[in-house]
Image 1 (spheres, one colour):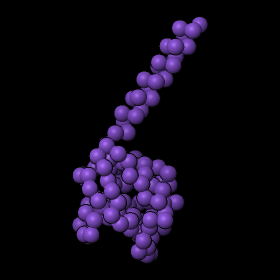
Image 2 (cartoon, helix red, strand yellow; image 1 turned 90 degrees about the vertical axis):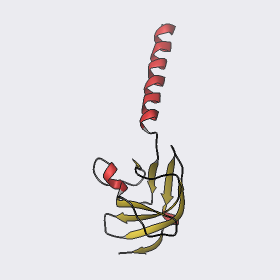
Image 3 (cartoon, one colour; image 1 turned 45 degrees about the horizontal axis):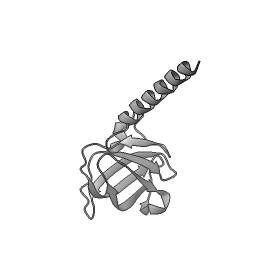
Image 4 (tube, helix red, strand yellow; image 1 turned 180 degrees about the vertical axis):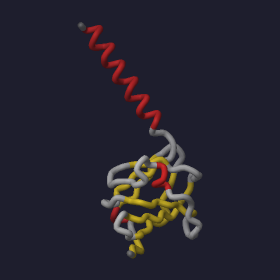
Length: 115
């Protein structure tokens, strides 16, 4: 019986490791309190916003407390433009984006919001 439990635990650990492996790379974690239909990054202090990262999600939006893969971006500091599903656009300034890490934006970091 002990052996069966050990094997079961090993299987769970391996599955957890596989799940973690699928989460590697840069990711954005939405902590704004809103569902976002657009998330775009520009090098801090510029208006050169790149592609909509919400396109990397299966439904094209990033719900509150959901994360999404970020592609086409190198590590650095970025201004983040976010548009929620109601049409409100907000920014977060000078957000640090690291390789193989998840960055987040909290509601309290939102500035320059307009509809």
